[in-house]
Length: 167
Image (tube, rainbow, N blue to C red; front, top):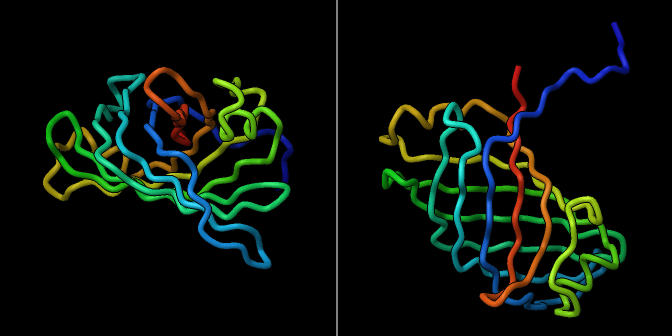
């Protein structure tokens, strides 16, 4: 049976914010330009106690393939929960090329809204095997996020509103 109605429900579960170094060009190839963005810190903050994930981001890196229409993300990040459990975040994603995104990334603007851009990810979190049981939910949900870039007096950042696909 086929339906055009949505068959998934997205639940906002946590806010994710990364502190970024400036974009570093690496190489050009037929598929586009390879760039690297180092992640120097950040945090996650849960929206709902049913989906706990308050943490500190230690470091990470996003290897990005840039072409004229979009950027393909390949990100790996490491952190610790508020309980001290270690985790690794891995995600791919798409950033569609747009004037608001380009202006923030090049330092010509301090930010853009979520609605002005298409900055998305599809995340998996690998959490320490001895982590408290309250984090088990994160092992069994697809996580997708919508993001935005911004700059403030502390530097260059990206933040996402992360959603779990729930029943």
